[in-house]
Length: 338
Image 1 (tube, rainbow, N blue to C red):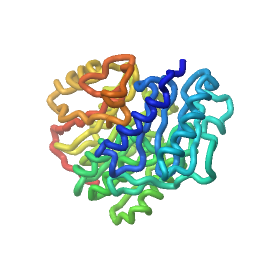
Image 2 (tube, rainbow, N blue to C red; image 1 turned 90 degrees about the vertical axis):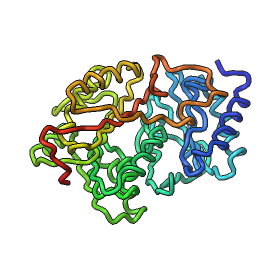
Image 3 (cartoon, rainbow, N blue to C red; image 1 turned 180 degrees about the vertical axis):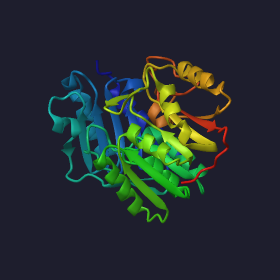
C-alpha cells in the first residue's frame, strides 16, 4: 500500500540527506530507502546528475504511482538532475533489469567521493556498479592504506582498491572474475592519475587465492567483500553458512600484524551470529576483532524517517551489511612482500 503522505516522506528524506555533512563530499548517495523508510521494494539513489530508482517488488506495477512521483519530484527538487533511470529487478526483460531511462538522454560516467573519482556504468547489469553502503569503508582505506599493499577480493568495479590507492597504498591487486566490471577499475585508476601499481587479476576467487598462496605472496591488507552466494567449479561462497571458512581461505595471505576486512551481507545472519563466529576464530590467538565499520545513515535511514527494522537484529552492527576489521598475527611473523 502506498502511504498517503509519501511525497512528504520523500521530501523529509531528501532534506535530511541534504543536511547530512557526511554527504557533502559525495555526489553518490541514497535519497530514500523504502525498506526502512516506509515503502518496501523501492530504493532511490543519486549518482551525480542521475536519479536511479530501483523497483525490487515482485509485483513491479504496484509501485508505478510512487515511481512517477519520484521522477517528477527529483527533477523539481534537485536542480543538478538531468536524467532518471528505472531498474526493475524482477522484470522478465533483461533490459528492464539493467535500467530504462524515464527522463533525459545521457547517464554519468563518473562520480566523486572524498575527492576521488570513480568510473561508473549504471547499466552494467542489474546492480549499480558502485555501492554507497561501503562509503565508510572507503574512507577507512583512505586513512589507513599509506605504504600498504592491498588485495581486494571480489573487487567488482574496484572502488575499495581505488580508495586505498588514493590513501597512498604502495600497490593494489584487484581480483574478480568479471572483466567488464574490472575495466571500470582501470578507468577509475586513469581518472585519478595514480602512479602506484594496480594489478588486475581477472580470475575466479578460489583459483586466484590458490595461485597467490603458491607464490607465497603476503599483503598488509586483504579485503573480503564476497557476494552472499556464488558457486563455480573451483569452490562455493555461502555467507549464510560458511563465512568463517571464507575468512580462513584468505587469512594465509595476510602479513604479520596485517588487517583482514571481512564483510558479511547475508540478510538473515544476525550481528551476534557473525560476531560469535569471529570470536570463535579469535580463540586461535592469531585473529582479533579490531573494529566495526558502520553503514552510512543515508543507507540505514535516519531516526526521523525509519519506520521498519531489518528482518533480523544486526547489532552490534547497524545494518545487515556487517563490516569488521580483523588484526592478523602469523606464527612465522612474515611481513608483506607484495
